Amino acid sequence: MDNKRSILVTGAAGFIGANLVKRLLQEGSFDCVVGVDSLNDYYDVRIKEYRLSLLAEEAARQPGKAWHFVKGNIADKALVTDLFARYNPAVVVNLAAQAGVRYSITNPDAYIESNLIGFYNILEACRHSYDGGATGVEHLVYASSSSVYGANPKVPYSTEDKVDNPISLYAATKKSNELMAHAYSKLYDIPSTGLRFFTVYGPAGRPDMAYFSFTNKLRAGEKIRIFNYGNCLRDFTYVDDIVEGVMRVIARPPERRKGEDGLPVPPYTVYNIGNSHPENLLEFVDILQQELIAAGVLPADYDFEAHKELVPMQAGDVPVTYADTSALERDFGFKPSTPLREGLRRFARWYKEFYL
Image (cartoon, rainbow, N blue to C red; front, side):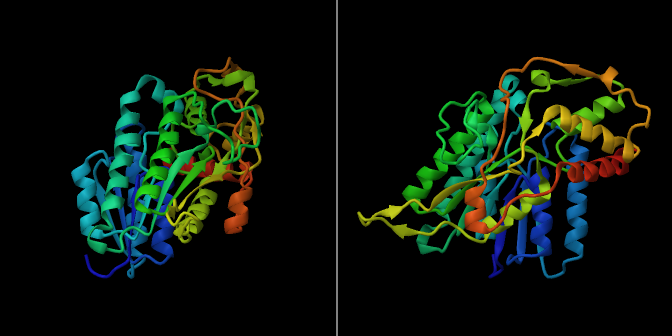
């Protein structure tokens, strides 16, 4: 391609991906933003198409930026190879992944294909971007997950903690991504940063997430099941905070340097991105119902008690997620801070506009 500086975002029609692309179109040092997404039907494709429509509108408002969307699966090696050859990305943000702890218990194939084979294809393309002495990829940023911490009893979760005991296949694939990235960073001097996201939420989010699925069920008059009898703590992180963190990380790749033995030290790092303020699940549900009534999604006299069921913990889930974000604060001067009520209020207003 020409001398335009390009960034490739995989999973661009996804929740975090679409919000990141919007920011990249509005600001940043990239002339060309390239997105790829398979638009699979893990959840309602209309939401993915809605996000893409918003990106098309944003791109039309930014004449100085080029936006290219490619429908495809990163597990298709030829597709990935072609994307790199065509656009020569300076930065790659890999957000394409099969998400969800519970789905991984019943549909493991989807996780192996996207999270392992797909990520391997991205790593190989990054490696070969240096062929022939080319500058190649300056920074690979990829999504990991708070799920890698498993049932670790120590909180808050620190990136210094051992995470060798995943309790779901989803978590195992995300830990594998970190190990694969480390190996490629060491072998091929690829600057890479993994980001462990903590329970991301917000408008036009994923319908399989609790706040969204609870809303759907309450509207349908169904009971919502609150696991571990409500004795769970979740570090809910608003999507704009996640995107802000990713934008800052993109701009500062780990430094390439030599160790005392004269060999390259892997330019590799991992950060938590979370709100560092875990919320009790019952309190979360209480705030959600208040905001759904305030937005007009549910009537003021809705009988919530009749639609709540406290049930035991289910396989693959953890009782607490709690991010230690001190490294992110130290290195980037940033700490997610959107209050849960404000984030759920924005979601409730979006939900009414989209569905009602």
